[in-house]
Length: 196
Image (cartoon, rainbow, N blue to C red; front, side):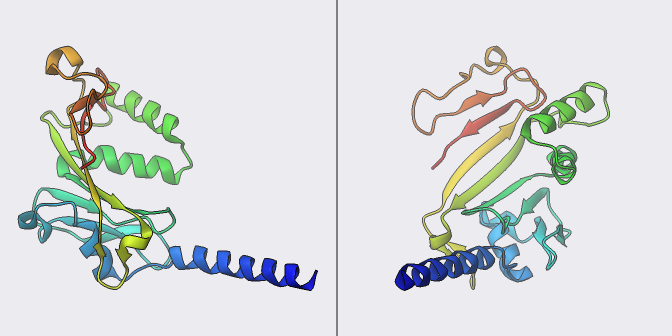
């Protein structure tokens, strides 16, 4: 019985340590380095970057000088996932973060932003706008250097209100890695490509 209690206490301690380790906020420099991983090399240095401060709030780490905005990995979520998107998408993305902070779930965010776009309160880009996503496993991530081994890319091109007819794209992939149109005909219609 004493061995079982010891094992249980050890397991509880290990789980607590693993959870606190994941929620540890990394340095600003490492977060920036990881956040820009999805971008082509020529665009990394000029990108605006959001990262997590010591309180766990998402804040601007770097204003940037080009057309890209990058988000650091959320330390409260399993795995590593960073994304960078065209500044033209910033109003849409920022509104999504506001709604999440207010406790809205995915469906509520979709409905609210859709209503606001229809009412002209929220502007979507008029031209196709790119999003780069790079993701992988915690065990493949080096928290000291910000490097992610064995990561995969996914590409998303927002093209609001596009349809399968207007683009010639299917609404689901027919082969691995092929482009397809998600949410056709809506404000958040986007071409999905990947993962690679």
